[in-house]
Length: 378
Image (cartoon, rainbow, N blue to C red; front, side, top):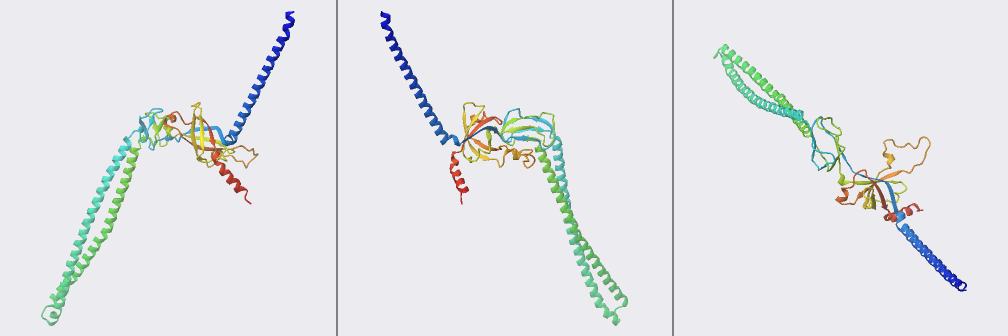
């Protein structure tokens, strides 16, 4: 009897619990739907306001303008002053070559300069002596002219005396002979003076030649000095040594690659965006950067510049789309991005590392409106 009476009560209690469970599930579902709706609305709003303006690519790599170190002169390597991965500053010596042959060439050039200076002094002394010879020849010519005038005066005075018989004809003949000799002496001394003057031009040319040879010797000495200085190869930039292949005792020629100096402190980012992504990109736009080596860290940067052409335009074998069948391929444009990081972060960033770059192009909305207005003018 008691069993029959208790059964409806338990059933009513179970139905109440089922109704509560259904109401709780309905509430949870409604809550989840509201959360999903709000989340979707927030996502849609974020995409509309921000997300649709973000251009992203993982075809991006850190780079640095490294310098390949090579000698300007040939020789055997006597010293290597740096080790692999060593930090260097501007002007630090990297490699030294054997200096003996270049020192000998410099000594020979210096001796040639001394010889040319001696030639100049000799030529100047000859020129001074010749000017003295000219002065002496001119003085002798003047003396001869004085003697000629005296002989002419004597002939003029004795001619009427001989005609009157006061003087003998022989005396007159002797005076005329002296006059003729004086004329010949004047002509000879004049020729000697002219000859001495003509030597000035030759000696001046000789002096000029000696001075030119001196300049050539100085130029040769300067080149020898440069060659000697170039036996010590110094770093032209600050950075770290990489790809070192030079060894002591190695014979190197001008242009031989010995090592590279990588300016890791000036690392920048090159991101290769599709041509369909760069329409809204502008210089100065902010960039969010994720480096694979720094997982979980976001770096900042700004768009610095755009390549003047797509990557295919600077390839070793540019495409020839005007020949054969054509298949359109989306091109990529290298975009240079300046990293806004501190010195501690830059110690970790190395050229060649993979990066994901996201450019915020919202600042170009006004440009898009101007472009639309420009293209819809009637």
